[in-house]
Length: 192
Image (cartoon, rainbow, N blue to C red; front, side, top):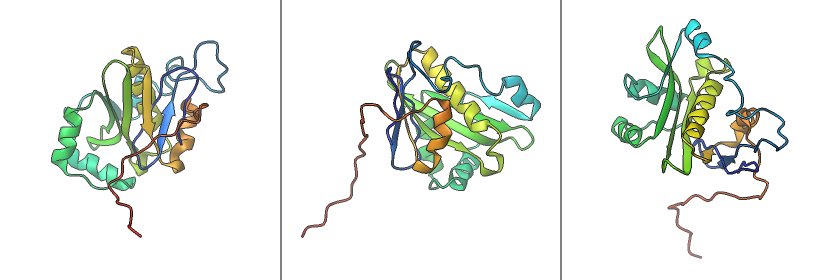
């Protein structure tokens, strides 16, 4: 499902097959919930720290084996660690949360783009053992805020239909123009 609002800022998460777009409302638009740029973070950095979580904004110290385990735990395919490393080297923004007791990543998201107009948010994951306590929201709010701070106004995200409800309270809405994303597929049509 493509999500969008009236200005040109859209968020994106790669999960599976659907393209989701999000755009921030202009100040005079009616919004049913606050947009990430105008709202304070739902969980402060201090609150995260007091609960034993550390925010990280670079791949330094990120154990790719543990990240791969989180990917697998949420249903993503296991990935070649060398390819993950290359993907992270080509990532513009990264944000992850480390559980201080274990020094393992428990929430993660990253964004790629042209650095000026467009960004796509990928790989938003939260370890199932840590879901439901606001870590995914904390990562998304901060990632979007950072992209907007840089002046990036078109932010897209891919999302599986089963998790669209997570993004709606963050300001994601269906594209009013009915725009649908397309994905290149190497599957060949069967000849009849």
